[in-house]
Amino acid sequence: MWYISFHGGSNAINNILVYHDSGKQHSQPNVLPTGGFDPELKELRGFLINENLLYVVNGYKEYNQILLYIKDGNSGYAFKEVFASNDMINSILHPYDLTFDTLGNCYVSSQDTNVVTGLQGTNSPLGVAFYLQEEYPPPNIFLAGTIVASSMGELPNTPTPYPPDVPTPQGLDVNFTDSTDSRVAHSVRGVLFFNGFLYVADEPGNSVNIYDSKTGKLHGQIMGDNLSAPVQLLLSETTGVLYIGSTGTDSVLSYDLSQETPSETVVPNTFIDGKVKHISGMDFDADGNFYAAERKAKKIKMFPPDGSGKGKDFIKDLPDNPEFIRYVPKK
Image (cartoon, rainbow, N blue to C red):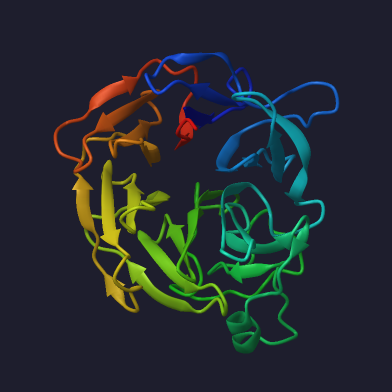
């Protein structure tokens, strides 16, 4: 089964839709319930399916939540709880993506604060990263649970007192929609945990930054002329290869993490070159075929396991711009 989140908003898809392996929409496509006591959904982004649990980013500016659902039926999920929200954790603002480490800690990237927040449970932030505490002792104050900080602490929607500026590349880059600096345009995007490290897509920095998840210290970077405006990250569990959606080049890049974690700046390989316009979600199916969503074209393309060829349309005419896609094999 394929699960897809969408850009959402007014008169759009504010749910996760499910499609069969064939690409045909499920007869009951809405995965998440709405109405009654269920939370209102708007602008869903990253989501993770772990056995019977589904975590999903409810990203709209008035919600700023990570919602937790439990499986209910063959494709649907019932609401369980608000796992995290800005009401309790001030660093979660316009969240985008999430990942878990092997200890069950969750890490959330937020676009408006431009930080990665660590959580050890429901609305329970981890302590601020050791490295940040040592380098920026009191009276500096970081936002709750900050594991990866912003290069600019004073951003338009960040609550006061503002956290200190942490220069790049340790701090994440950020830029704005116009010269007035009134609205963040590009900031942190995808986040992924692997082998003790956090991989963070620094979209305006044109890099994937690698942080020690225990200390928060920058360990290395993935960047090169072929990598521009990275947004989403995907790890192949079978090969240990990291895939990077490079929106600035309409490409998919790759780097093999199975050998060792980069401790310096390394250049990624080109997996798919310029053949996925406005790339968003990525995943593999059970046969190893690679899928990439084209956001503005409202479709998902399929490529062979080696990424060769031009790709062919797998699902066309989606009802909204696709954001994240996830393949869940039948059991």
